[in-house]
Length: 130
Image (cartoon, one colour):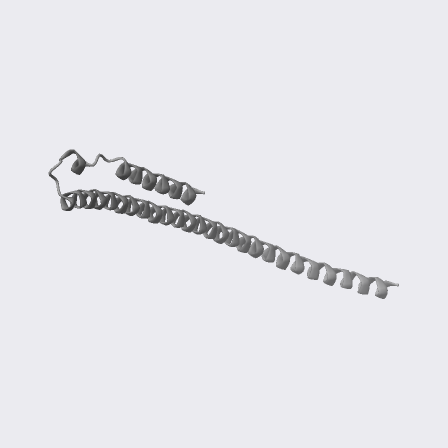
């Protein structure tokens, strides 16, 4: 939509410049002695000025277009960098959490082995006593 608006502005500017060309007073008609070569020369000068204005307008619009793309690309890259940093932090947190759980599992496994050995000893003693 942003580029569409700029294109519409560009078309309006072209229409305005052409309307100025068509409504320009013809200086050649006011002089009865002016030759057709002078009239053509004046028209060519006006045409050159109009084309020059159009080219300047087109250059400004192209610069704005490139700047818009660059700004959009920069924003998207910045967002991507932020997301990657968030993901990295999340992975690091998860890894630390997993490491803590592994330590707790190893401790519980050791306690379980001790409890199994103690139960085995008690069962052996009870079978011997019976």
